Image (tube, rainbow, N blue to C red; front, side):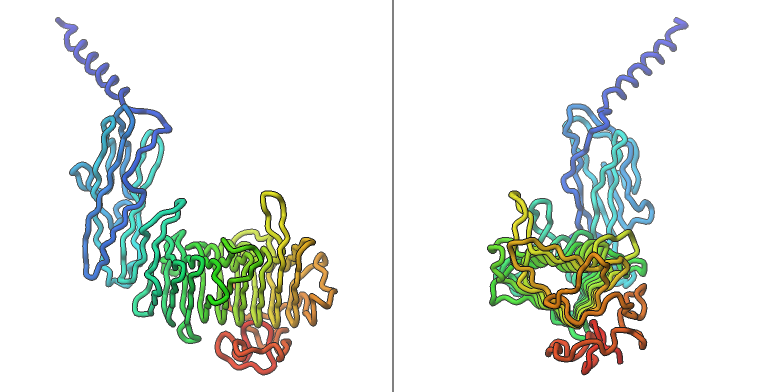
Length: 478
């Protein structure tokens, strides 16, 4: 009988080991969730709390032990969890039976009238299972704003279609999660002073035959930016995706007047998706606009028509302008200045080509026009202009009364393409590190422009100052 306690203990240990061995220990195991994002869709008008739920599935034939379920921000999170009836922010060794599920309830409390609260209050629930980390995003509305949230998904892209002929005013900011889509035959008018904030990977999509008109003013520009408003994010690139404009017809004219587009991946992408290449039935007018701090490209055009005046495109990890697949472009009194220092940059500020790459090889398409008048094209690399043309299509381009930074590999001797240009002269910007591209009193660019190029759009500069003998670029030194 003296061996009975030992036998009992041995049996218990063996049983415990067997029970532990019954859990799924596959390191490639993945939990499944009822949603990859939990969005709290109550728009708060007073201090409020709301609850949402998440289902966690174990679809395997063995039980699973989740070693950790926790909030990414821990005790600092505004969110609270309830896992199988137990409240908290951190849970360990949570079991789910075979072919079973787990309920998690999530609460959040936010004061939307607190001006220190961001527009979108985010966190994530982290799950650690067999050494693998998975997460589910949490998104709630913070301050009072007009929230545009996704209602559809296509190819992994979350989007919502705006009401036809929408008007955005400056009464409250607009916060876009996913893509806000202007549908075919519909329009979006954005009035002066409107603030538009995009969450990460979000943007504005003007679908084919849709139309956008941005009507900012010199004193009240429309601003497109990210949702983070802390000081460290004020000029941080790559916080949202892009403004994406597709083709229309000759009666549809997209316009962006007095806007600031900052801190995106691409500032503006204007392209022909469905019309025959070279049909030239699409147009974008950009006036008095400042595009800056793009982690990809400032303006990406594919077989499009763009007319830009008094516009600044500055600081991109790649091209400032990539004008591709032919098209027709005119830049008048514009400043292209690439002083990007966040990573190594090899791409020039301005890139032009007259072809596209098809499965059968390169296909040439007419570059109808690419005119730069009274402009500045400058930056930190030795050559800020690349002309990439193929035979078989027109490559019409003209740089006139324009300051260029180019090296010896770029020929500027043909008067049909380079007329009265100024090469490799420091433009004399006020302070590039602060994105200030106004001209100093001793700037080389003062009075170097041609007055015959002045149009109704460029009779004043981007700040509203009058021009007579024009300086180069978007600013007129007073």
